[in-house]
Image 1 (cartoon, helix red, strand yellow):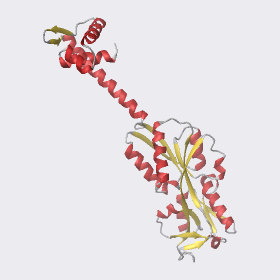
Image 2 (cartoon, rainbow, N blue to C red; image 1 turned 60 degrees about the horizontal axis):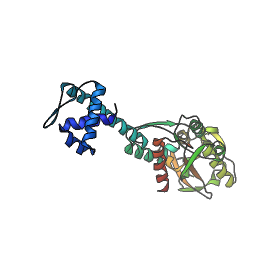
Image 3 (cartoon, rainbow, N blue to C red; image 1 turned 135 degrees about the vertical axis):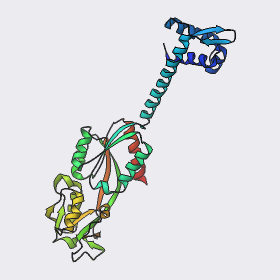
Image 4 (cartoon, one colour; image 1 turned 120 degrees about the vertical axis):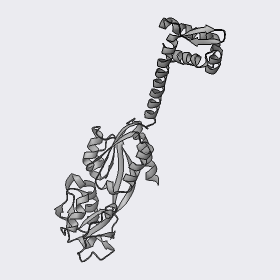
Amino acid sequence: MELRHLRYFVAVAAERNFTRAAEKLGIGQPPLSQQIKSLERELGVELFVRTPQGAALTQAGEAFLVEARRVLDDATRAAQAAQRAARGESGQIRIGFTGSAAFNPLVPTLIQRYTQRFPAVQLTLDEANTPILVQGLAEGRHDAVFFRPGRTTLTELDGIAVQRLPDEPMKIVLPSAHPLAARRRLPLAALANEPFVLVPGPAGITLNEEIVRACAEAGFSPRLAQPAPQIASVVNLVAAGLGVSIVPAAIAQVQVKGVRYLDVTGVRMSAKLSLGWREGDTSATLRQFVALAQHAGRD
């Protein structure tokens, strides 16, 4: 028994006439009659009583019609489900992001656009540092990650495709009581003798690279006075008077009492942001997410 047999049967049942049903199906009336007879032989029952006016359902036909319609409806829903999945409109996607990336307005905006366009996709979000995110991609725990690319991570990116997103400027953050806090902008060299609050080691490795590079260009090496567990904690520790720091400009939206954000002059520095995913990943949900990110990156 094939789905077409059920469609033929339902068409005849709806029209109560083989000729009209054949016209509606776009086939000849004799082949339609033969298909119905073949179905009746397979079932071992009569589904129709042939009449001069056409055909009437038997009791067996009435019972079969209920189930035939259900099977056809299920088949239609199955086909639609497969088509939605192929278009990336259903399924799941696991997105990772660094703590500092979460403050970049592009990241929440992109996630919001994706969930609005694909509400049936189950979206899972996970915050971690760049090395863990890159490892999560390689091990299949994440489908795509927003991370801070740097020279130390480039060697770890085998098999990972990368979409560069717009760079973000960086700002100096000072305690509001600091003698230089009244300034709107400041050369980085003015911080040469200041204690720094930074996220040490792998947890902040990319931003640290950029900060150390820019400080070296300004003629000094930053002195770590207070480590911070994550980028969002840096501002609070600066507010507590434990040192100064340099953060991505988007962090300035964290309005903590007791800090001032200043523009950097004298050296070029930026916080880089990228979206990474496994090369060759054929997931349709991922394809749609990457397409949105690529479009956003051109805006």
